[in-house]
Length: 171
Image: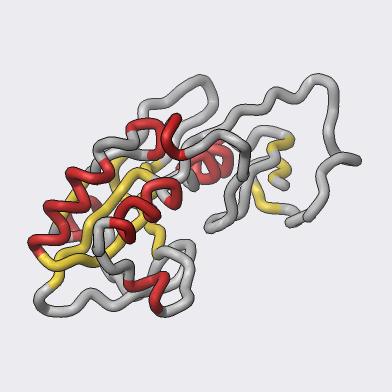
């Protein structure tokens, strides 16, 4: 729950907070494509470690829409060079769930100074023989809400998403 652009509370039930003038919309989540990566034998270090995926604010500005503006937030998963290329091909098949990566390699290029200090989620070490691979993240709206300072907004928490009966095959 956001009030005046600041995170004010984290309720588990919003039914008492809902108003008739609210509008709801759903954004895809990169967790949607993780099953496809695992099915193709591509290891995901954050899952193996029992962690949430690492997410970072970038220096990449999103296009403003009314009062909403802010940085692109990305999720990062480390892969070998071969797996990074395969991951890009596989995730490109999920355009409604963030699709292909937006960046591979040097995180400073997109304004991330320290991969061991994510803005959201949990840090995952990138080994010497791995590349960090970055996807657009569904936490981006939280950054836009914070900058807009609108009176009220309700969002998902980083690492938690809406689950529906829409199958991955239909995304």
